[in-house]
Image (cartoon, rainbow, N blue to C red; front, side, top):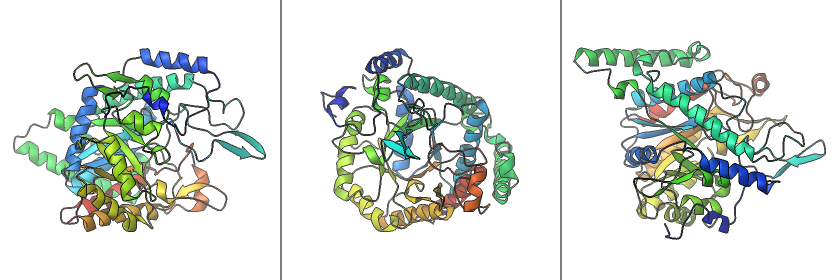
Length: 450
């Protein structure tokens, strides 16, 4: 990190995927307002996550990073947040109990409001308007007023993130995440399915293990049993928002982006000399970077040198999004390049974004079988390279949606319209999410990774 870095030096670099704000004075007002607000997270929490990710880096734990494709200002109810948390807790229980390793839990939540787009505009029936860039920028309806970027949405994103964090902290610290609640996490639409029944059998096993522990005198009322650490993360896309929430830690004097515990840089904004890389090279949060199929070893090492020049374990997570058909061909050379250069990387598989396609009627979707194949290929590449498959990164919801094909319900293209609710990318529903956790846990079992 250079001594000349400040939260504003990104403005001297080319910035991709930024809105064209129509009113600079309104943007300045929103920026000043955000700068006066309390931090959403604390530097000490971000350091704790770095330490937890260092365990993943050493092969001592597994990362589950999961949540919505794009959070909505219209779906921020306590029930919606709780149901999303339920699925994450269920997946973590499956991975930890069946896979046999501790699970670090990071949500795509409390800040995942921005979305990169392949084009700055979209055209429908001959009408061209700015693309929807997530609720932090503009609104989803295809009309001229809704699509105008509004800087006050930055403030609203902060406020909704604060409310979501309050609820998450209450749920994860107030007893809801107690392992003895493992049966209670099973939602009705999941419990009635074959994968829900499989989860109930696992929950029975956890309960038997807890009863045995209690019979030996182990105190099950400790914080480790009753509480969980759930960290927040989002793609840090809108740089004015991130800059406004960056603070100096009073203990260390280091800069932290206090909008989330972990931030990641997307596939479209990972230019080594770009504004996003410049900004995140200077904050001390743990960082992620999406790695697509076009990245070669030289570019990968340049990213590592830029974001983690001091080679701090847990600082940098590389989130691969290759596609099921190419991951085993293209990932091993990247694994070896980072290993041989001495970069302590947390490797995580995003099996969603490289497997997106559109049906004949233009509906964007993903097939569960392709998602499983990419996860399996990710583990196989690590077995080949002698490296640790550190985690999975998935888009999911707690709702009973029909957005991804396949899974236990064998969803077909004709089923997508019944509950297709995403504002952007298709998400796994609860049943598909838990099914994926069971499959990943099988790959994690002792002896399955050499």
